[in-house]
Length: 79
Image 1 (cartoon, one colour):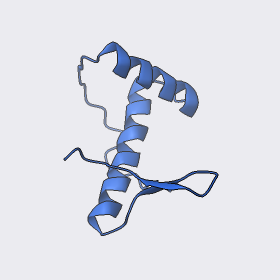
Image 2 (cartoon, helix red, strand yellow; image 1 turned 90 degrees about the horizontal axis):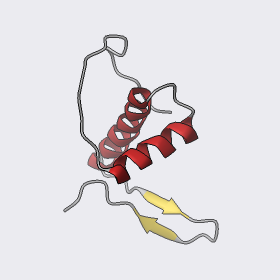
Image 3 (cartoon, rainbow, N blue to C red; image 1 turned 60 degrees about the vertical axis):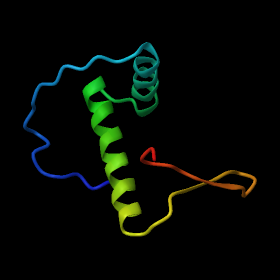
Image 4 (cartoon, rainbow, N blue to C red; image 1 turned 30 degrees about the vertical axis):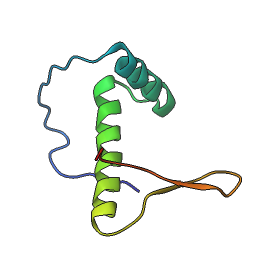
């Protein structure tokens, strides 16, 4: 489960410019998550990313395991 932190109900404005690729990705994620808005989709994505970064900071390894049992690591912050 993803932990939600305080101040979720207070809304602040933000204007961003996205590449077409990023906007397409945002639209796909909104569809997949059935989020009500792009802002809600971004909020979900930030919560997932924060959870993964915090786990990694505590020494956890983030691994994706395929159906065949093969594993690959996930790079969260570009080096």
